[in-house]
Image (cartoon, rainbow, N blue to C red):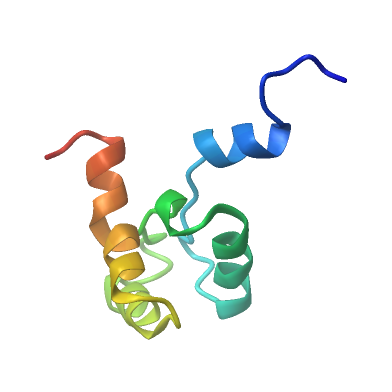
Length: 84
């Protein structure tokens, strides 16, 4: 109907990255993880409102695979910013 080669949802999923920042809650994470998947989530903190220790504990406690935790912790940023 729109003439676009892909849906708005697909475009969003292919171009948007998110960060939990100061929103360290399991329901918030589960929602964004279900919408975008681990490949589009970047680790970050909202310093000085949240400490690195709190964010790290949150990431380590998530009910996701170790591979997904590594993507969120650093691999996604490496890919996005072409660090490696």
